[in-house]
Length: 73
Image 1 (cartoon, rainbow, N blue to C red):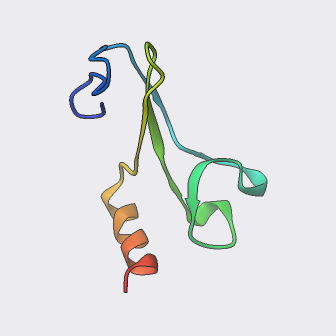
Image 2: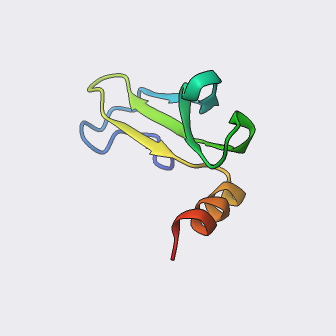
Image 3: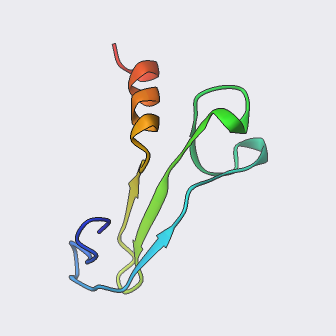
């Protein structure tokens, strides 16, 4: 949906982009990499407003490298 701007399930083009957010006490849509919200990787959601299908994407390439360093190997 991020790249095609259409839903892979129902083909609707009514897509909602919900930006990632890091809040207190682990709230928001993020992946924690440390003890504070400043070390969180934000995860953006794409949601079909017709059927409800959703996808999640890490949009920042440098964040992907941080995740790879922490969770690979």
